[in-house]
Image (cartoon, rainbow, N blue to C red; front, top):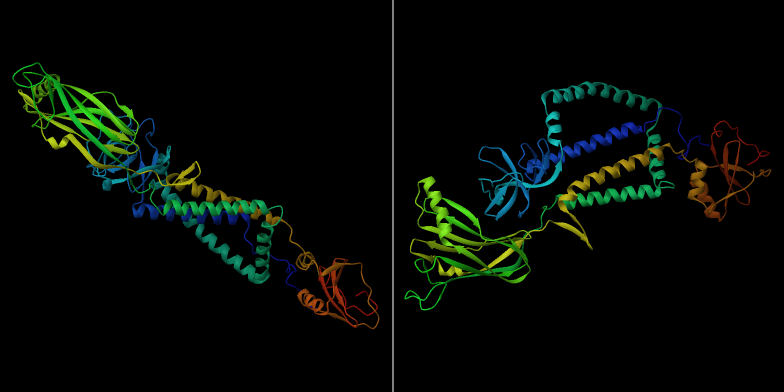
Length: 519
């Protein structure tokens, strides 16, 4: 009879199963390597970049020494915080306040003036997706030459002992333990993880890991924002009027577009606009400019929120006051103040939209005239919106930008949970061979009291239990089982022969049974 079966523990010796601290260190190293590779891929491909903030231009949102991760997007909207290269080579991280893909106007939240540069969408490094307070200071410390040198020394110093220990372990394994023991212990750990009381915890951690990987794949294989989609068509109609006394200059007491307004008769006028489109905010302004390059913007009223549909508004132009504003600037610059150009712009913003129709008027000492009659109607422009790409479940949404942060965190939690479960499952005592047999063949094995052997009936020992099970199934018999003195005995009795299989700690020391002994 064989002294060793697939269910028995092999001879004592040093275990080849890695200890929990080594498993933890290996997993941490693997995760660190994966993190470094992922960061290298993202940074190398230009899909993401790190911005170490300095100055106070974005206070109170960002402070000096913070670390901001920016990711390239398919489109950018008003309100996004974006990074771009200045002419000096430095990187600016400011908020988009106006513009379109052809050129954006940016401004620091804590700045009083807008940025001089107007980068296009292709010039932007990306928009902010992750803010790590004080992360820039930590990154600077970790990348200093002393820290990098210390890390290199630690790696080199630990490499040789690690190699020596690895060689000693391999030699010890060859001498004292077979590879089947390690496989058996590993199978025991995995099997125990999916048995009570670990089953619900293992299932939950595994599901969390699968969800985290799926969420990460979805978040990082596409843009942070969904492609811009065409919205409702925006339309703006202009007109103007001025009240005049009865004179030979006009046939009526009201001048209406597109006729010029003669300033000897009237010096003030009203500009009317009719907006048709989605809900938005309208802020009317007058943009003044002269041939010498001077320009300024004068508000013509408070911003007004309008609902979708049709909205009508009117602003008053005090031409003499605007002309005086240009004359004061001309005294300082020495440039001519005439002719003055007035652009009446009811700026439409909202939901990432930026629609700036303009009515251009030319002002001379004698008249205010419309530059282009076709500009009285600005139509046919579709306002595009680009919402963040998101997973939607009912009223709940999760954007791709947030998912890029959540996914690795969930994956780390899942891995930590599985490692903790594996550590506890590994310490759980292994089942005996008899317990494994009873669990695998519950309907075939019957527990009984020790059965005495019958005189003259031969007893045949089989080498393993599967063979005994096949004999029982072949003859349509049950396997009788009992335990005594640490020995597990399984027998199948037919009319003439007893087939027996034994296992346990004392099997190797037992003498061959005689017919008078118990089977």
